[in-house]
Length: 488
Image (cartoon, rainbow, N blue to C red):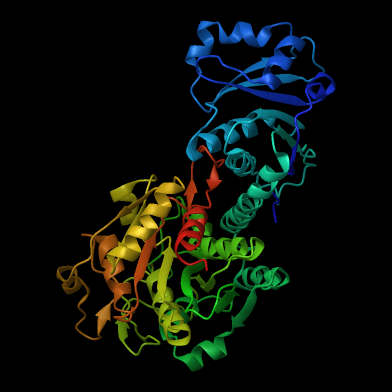
């Protein structure tokens, strides 16, 4: 997998910038105040930093961003970045500054003089996340990526504080790699193998094959994958880091490629459907993070892995399948397949683990993109306290999330003349009727959140903390939810 760049934390050495070959970054406040490290760099560059801070150009630099000087006199470095940042930045601003460092750094070694700025661990997280690059399938030699060294006060304390942040970066990278991977590489077999490899981190990983899924009665999930040569699977990842309390369950939709099945999607843009396993990717990244940081919580992650293809044995519109719960479902549209996968995996999670709460994630509907665009995931829940805890975590981590309604009035849109329900409710309120469908597979006593991440799992343009492509949305928010509410 893609590994985060190497970041080390050392005590400030004032003469280190003089002979450093690579790139150097220093900091100044909006009103031009600088610490001892920046003052030394200013003297080495014969006052160039001070001239910048006294100029109109500094006023135009936004907080968290910087001004670049190429080949600064008095230094061996090929570039110097002066970042505008208060001494006590917010988490969001510290991460933004880290992202600015990553874009400035490129592949060169980077030396950062951070002094006694607070939240350096969050700055390092922003640096790591924005430095991500998916090059697994490029044949040209990729340049070696230089390391980043951050000089700061109390470097041992900062290094210790940054360890959980680096575990988060690793988990986000794992998610991004999965979502970015092409479908001929990330098959259901390959996906399961990558998750099985995380046993080395201390996770318990169990792979349920088709025969066992059939014995369990997962007719809804198996129906989705029956047109593909790729075997359908359910992978169960268990992290027991807490006491004897019931686990939190995370459930992810893992459609490794979605053609729409017999209800075939238009050709234009179908290549994007490699990301239709985004929910499973997020669950996998969260479980990796928990294992890496040795979280003191009990969490189980379950992903349903299928491929939705229009083969000769493919599910047809009008077919009726029986879910593990026992409810029958008329399949009106084979392109509404994710909810069929989730229905069975969610029921299995509740039956086997009796979780304290359950969160499912899926790139489920285009309707949520129409409603919320690419800034927020849709959040649906049957329990206010649980939902508010997640929304608070998402806000704290800067991951957009917006609560959407549920209600019995939408259920009539799912009525079927031949089965207990049908799998779509038509164009009106498409994201809501999908959530209403899923709620039928949630036991009354289980607090539940459904996250429709169709608009946020990947981006067509660069974002503050992610380059174009998979974002890893959800890993930060769910890890925060667990840290704040489930760690013993």
